[in-house]
Image (cartoon, rainbow, N blue to C red; front, side, top):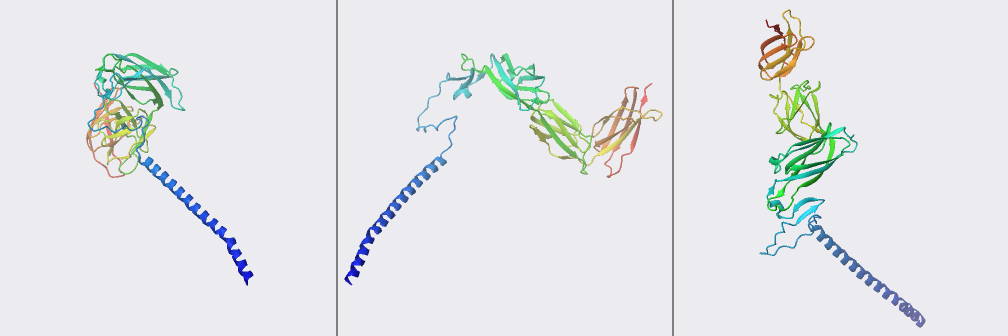
Length: 378
């Protein structure tokens, strides 16, 4: 019995160091876990602070130190000009508030490039014209230079100071119109001012404007005049719809236009403002109201048809067209009302006139043919 107890004590004594080692390992693991959690919390707080901070503007640098109440910061020296590439780019803060003077002249230099895939034109035109918006436009001068296609740089000397619009163009392509100002500072006449500007003009394909016009029945409105005019300018572009009512105007400079459907002077729909952008701009689909049509036939005193007779009419919708080989012409898209038409055949000196009234006809009914005799004057 004594020997059994002795063996039991030996076994119990042999197990004590193992339990102590297990206890030390558990304490070390808990301590390591605490350190890891502490580092994670510190990293999270740092990341949250950086995330909530305002982004740094690379052009302005760090945010300035807040100004103490009542402290007045000194104004920058107006003579502290920044010169970059020989071009005076201005004074720091008070520069924008300084009055500008347009006494004197400057130099405009630049280069022309072409968009990838574009063939170099045989020649291109540099347009220098007074700006519509910039200061100094009243003292600006218009200049136009035509250069060979292989000449891709330009220099304009002794250009009067002022506000300019600069653009390069060639058949089917043009650059964006850029605004440039040549000037001096009225308060610093001893400085040359912005008297030299260098610019890069890239030629890209001109814009395309397209659209579709429908009759009130849903069919395409064919042979309908479409006109487009630049806002504030007399420049006008025109085309006619095809058999399906589709139309397209190519080689347009980007800009704001007024779109008119029908005769330009008296459109069939209200004029629509549209902004044309490269490469293709699609206008809204348009639907005409119910309109009239008429068929005219020009004949001589023996009722023989006369071709190529000029037809001009006055009424709700202006008329301007020619008769065909059979002396006939069908005029569509006319507003209802009273009309007066005059016909003239210049080759023979024959003339004729006719008055009629048009009303909207039921669907499927053809307008009656109206004969107009064109006689020679004695």
